Length: 426
Image 1: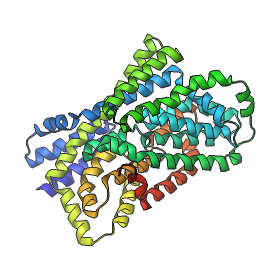
Image 2 (image 1 turned 60 degrees about the vertical axis):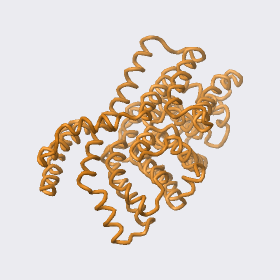
Image 3 (image 1 turned 30 degrees about the vertical axis):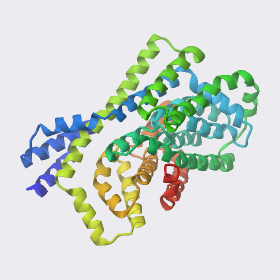
Image 4 (image 1 turned 90 degrees about the vertical axis):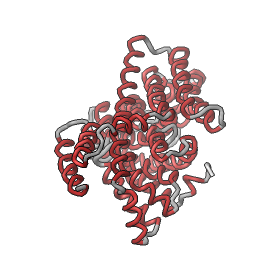
């Protein structure tokens, strides 16, 4: 009965998803349908969702999102961009380099690719276009670089992955630092050497002359210091990742009120609503997908998958390359959290059997999702950058396409050299 029930539910899930019903409720409906056909206890989903979400590490998700929203609405991102411009703006293709640097710094605060792309893109896209860069390049650069928001700690997807695999969030954060720096450096180098091909003029030196060096650096310094305090506190053992998330909200609020002074009650209310909406959406998806993970375990699919790989005597590297292809395809149709919650419970036993470090796999998975956020049809960064820039989604994708190859190169390097992901934590 199990095979026929699973096939029937799978066939019914496709039209449910196409109907426009949110993915969390679509998955939950499919899971309930399977459990009903199998005669399983229908009270299981409630207890499963409660058990999965009842983890202290998940509290950090709304806090990190909240901190990023406060800073993006307070004028802190403008201060970060101006300070980065003063430091890097005189270099070749300076303003494009400033975009990459500002995104890397904000990624170490936000934990979200969408929040990073929106916060920096609102400021940088008009400046890049004014500075003579083609519109397609400008929007593509922000969309692609914004993907660093889910790799450079504190990363919301890494927190979710740690909860699923039951490993330390702090260890994952430490491990992600070097891969995040490598991808940022690759994007930096690409822009440095190739930016001239997509630029018709250079007005940036005139813009730098308008900046007051002392005031600009003083306003921008807290933004550079912010991730050092939060992440340094985690790595130094001063506080846990969850406590660090609460500290980040406190620091963001303090900066918004005392230094940037660009907030009021209405804007603060809007920040709370937006952050609450984003966090609740993620947690609802996690809850729904935890039921699917329970069913996968109940049907012993992960064990059967491991036995198949073992009997086929597949090389670990070949297995990783195959999983990468699968993740790239899934990422085109599902959002990041869903991919993590669907794929990881299935492949985790196989990873352990093949001797693949779960931390290394987590980094690989998230980098694949960096590619997913800039590839259609679901690529979220394409849509948000399109919305803030007024460019079509197709134009944003065409602009991001060269960066897809850069990120893919970084992914290949990290797949082939696992110690990049693990040597710091080891």
